[in-house]
Image (cartoon, rainbow, N blue to C red; front, side, top):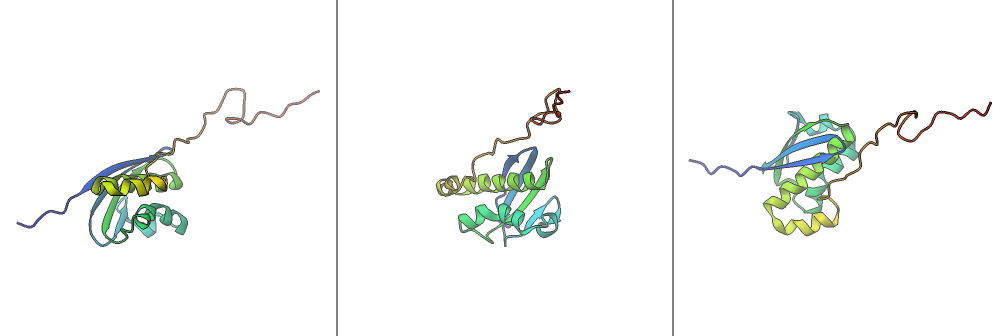
Length: 132
Protein backbone atom coordinates (compact mmCIF):
# COMPACT_ATOMS: atom_id res chain seq x y z
CA UNK A 1 0.00 0.00 0.00
CA UNK A 2 1.31 3.44 -0.93
CA UNK A 3 2.40 5.94 1.72
CA UNK A 4 -0.33 8.57 2.12
CA UNK A 5 0.83 12.17 1.89
CA UNK A 6 0.12 14.09 5.09
CA UNK A 7 -2.68 16.61 4.87
CA UNK A 8 -2.23 19.61 7.10
CA UNK A 9 -5.32 21.70 7.86
CA UNK A 10 -5.53 25.20 9.32
CA UNK A 11 -8.09 27.96 9.69
CA UNK A 12 -7.62 31.61 8.81
CA UNK A 13 -9.91 34.58 9.46
CA UNK A 14 -9.98 38.19 8.30
CA UNK A 15 -12.86 40.67 8.57
CA UNK A 16 -15.90 38.41 8.05
CA UNK A 17 -14.12 35.82 5.92
CA UNK A 18 -13.27 32.34 7.20
CA UNK A 19 -10.92 30.06 5.27
CA UNK A 20 -10.30 26.36 5.84
CA UNK A 21 -6.96 25.58 4.22
CA UNK A 22 -5.53 22.13 3.51
CA UNK A 23 -1.91 21.68 2.40
CA UNK A 24 -0.67 18.51 0.71
CA UNK A 25 2.65 17.67 -0.92
CA UNK A 26 2.51 18.59 -4.58
CA UNK A 27 3.57 20.96 -7.32
CA UNK A 28 2.16 24.25 -6.03
CA UNK A 29 -1.38 23.94 -7.41
CA UNK A 30 -3.85 26.26 -5.65
CA UNK A 31 -7.60 25.57 -5.68
CA UNK A 32 -10.08 27.84 -3.92
CA UNK A 33 -13.74 26.82 -3.56
CA UNK A 34 -13.16 24.12 -6.22
CA UNK A 35 -12.08 26.79 -8.72
CA UNK A 36 -8.61 27.48 -10.09
CA UNK A 37 -6.64 30.11 -8.22
CA UNK A 38 -6.41 32.45 -11.23
CA UNK A 39 -10.17 32.36 -11.82
CA UNK A 40 -11.06 33.10 -8.19
CA UNK A 41 -8.68 36.01 -7.60
CA UNK A 42 -8.72 38.16 -10.74
CA UNK A 43 -6.09 40.73 -9.67
CA UNK A 44 -2.39 40.03 -9.33
CA UNK A 45 -2.34 41.85 -5.97
CA UNK A 46 -4.72 39.37 -4.34
CA UNK A 47 -2.82 36.42 -5.81
CA UNK A 48 0.40 37.83 -4.37
CA UNK A 49 -1.21 38.23 -0.93
CA UNK A 50 -2.29 34.58 -0.92
CA UNK A 51 1.15 33.25 -1.93
CA UNK A 52 3.24 35.47 0.38
CA UNK A 53 3.82 32.80 3.08
CA UNK A 54 5.33 30.46 0.46
CA UNK A 55 7.56 33.18 -0.99
CA UNK A 56 8.86 34.29 2.41
CA UNK A 57 9.55 30.73 3.57
CA UNK A 58 11.07 29.79 0.15
CA UNK A 59 8.64 26.90 -0.35
CA UNK A 60 7.03 27.92 -3.67
CA UNK A 61 5.84 24.90 -5.61
CA UNK A 62 6.27 22.36 -2.79
CA UNK A 63 2.68 22.17 -1.53
CA UNK A 64 -0.74 22.06 -3.13
CA UNK A 65 -3.36 24.29 -1.50
CA UNK A 66 -7.04 23.43 -1.29
CA UNK A 67 -9.07 26.15 0.43
CA UNK A 68 -12.75 26.61 1.23
CA UNK A 69 -13.62 30.25 1.93
CA UNK A 70 -16.94 31.67 3.11
CA UNK A 71 -18.07 35.16 4.08
CA UNK A 72 -16.61 38.59 3.63
CA UNK A 73 -15.37 40.19 0.45
CA UNK A 74 -12.63 39.19 -1.92
CA UNK A 75 -9.89 41.10 -0.06
CA UNK A 76 -10.84 39.64 3.32
CA UNK A 77 -10.92 36.17 1.79
CA UNK A 78 -7.39 36.59 0.43
CA UNK A 79 -6.17 37.64 3.88
CA UNK A 80 -7.94 34.71 5.52
CA UNK A 81 -6.32 32.23 3.12
CA UNK A 82 -2.90 33.80 3.76
CA UNK A 83 -3.30 33.34 7.52
CA UNK A 84 -4.48 29.74 7.03
CA UNK A 85 -1.51 28.90 4.81
CA UNK A 86 0.93 30.48 7.28
CA UNK A 87 -0.55 28.51 10.20
CA UNK A 88 -0.40 25.28 8.19
CA UNK A 89 3.25 25.88 7.28
CA UNK A 90 4.12 26.42 10.94
CA UNK A 91 2.42 23.15 11.87
CA UNK A 92 4.57 21.42 9.22
CA UNK A 93 7.85 23.07 10.27
CA UNK A 94 8.08 24.91 13.60
CA UNK A 95 11.32 26.64 12.46
CA UNK A 96 9.26 28.81 10.07
CA UNK A 97 7.41 30.47 12.95
CA UNK A 98 10.01 33.20 13.52
CA UNK A 99 10.18 34.11 9.82
CA UNK A 100 6.42 34.20 9.29
CA UNK A 101 5.85 36.05 12.56
CA UNK A 102 8.39 38.68 11.50
CA UNK A 103 6.38 39.44 8.37
CA UNK A 104 3.12 39.51 10.37
CA UNK A 105 1.57 36.49 8.66
CA UNK A 106 0.67 34.70 11.90
CA UNK A 107 -1.22 37.62 13.43
CA UNK A 108 -4.98 37.66 12.96
CA UNK A 109 -5.93 41.15 11.75
CA UNK A 110 -8.56 42.30 14.28
CA UNK A 111 -9.88 45.20 12.20
CA UNK A 112 -13.52 44.82 11.26
CA UNK A 113 -16.28 47.12 10.13
CA UNK A 114 -17.54 49.38 12.88
CA UNK A 115 -21.24 49.20 13.58
CA UNK A 116 -23.65 51.94 12.54
CA UNK A 117 -24.88 54.15 15.38
CA UNK A 118 -28.43 55.43 15.71
CA UNK A 119 -29.03 59.05 14.69
CA UNK A 120 -26.16 58.88 12.20
CA UNK A 121 -25.78 57.97 8.55
CA UNK A 122 -22.97 55.48 9.14
CA UNK A 123 -20.60 54.53 11.92
CA UNK A 124 -19.11 58.02 12.21
CA UNK A 125 -20.71 60.18 9.53
CA UNK A 126 -23.42 62.47 10.88
CA UNK A 127 -26.40 64.01 9.16
CA UNK A 128 -25.76 67.56 7.95
CA UNK A 129 -26.28 70.17 10.65
CA UNK A 130 -28.67 72.97 9.74
CA UNK A 131 -28.57 76.12 11.85
CA UNK A 132 -31.86 77.62 10.60
